[in-house]
Length: 379
Image (cartoon, rainbow, N blue to C red):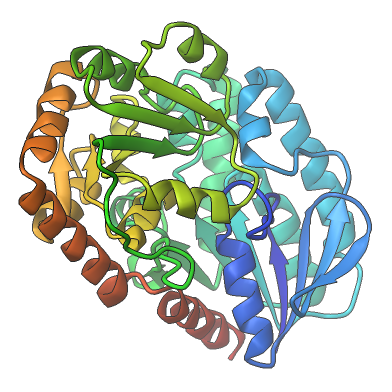
């Protein structure tokens, strides 16, 4: 099967950010399928059996894209969509088109390629756009909102199959007009070969690894750190708010900068006692399927989450961590202190987290599930 895979942010383990498209694509290629990846960058290369076609004009990593002002970000998304459309309309003919959003503008090259090659489209939604930028206050123009919602509805109707990364995203897609029976749930995954449970550090250490942008409520982590002088907080990543957060941080908070590779994330998780998955208190963000949570599970560490939805249900249902109220630094400090003071319970949660990763979020199993959706669409 020839797969035309469209994703602006294609990142291998040697890079920084979510590696889902790389991990899936290399498994598709290893199974004997031809994969052509159209992404931001320049030139052509082959990576682990994947033909990678770089398109100029857009940001190649999500952290950089979200660190700039929204009008500039939208202009870059539009430029990339135009370049990706031109690349997708060049041969060879695919058997299926697989496109990933966000940004929602990926629908444009996806629809064009599906029409040009008369190939079925599988459209994947990792975050609910345009609902997320609307609720975050980034997409304010009524005209742009109407246009984005119209594009969302149109691509949902035109796609042969749809993939959602969480139950909340699936429900949001159906509410926006997606046929419920066409939406498959393929969440983010745990890299069990990269993250491994290790003995926790002697001094209780809480870590965060990921974007430090408007959607991530790390100010609560800084306030909690001020209340817990005997706990180390290590924040790894970059983003729009990092400089501001670093200026206001107490002595027991360390900013390591962005990770150089996924291996660095795995090493940080391994020397942590618990790991944070924090977001701003915005309703749409409860639907997220964040990589950092599944990395935490794979590392066998208790997960601390502040979204009252699927993420809370996962950690509490599996006894794999604790829930804290979004934006509530006192609650966060209390839960961290409880984990510090109950090492046997924290160790039990870590074992359950790893078991959950192995049982439900193994990367091989979820890549196979996505491939089955593509094969069904191609048939």
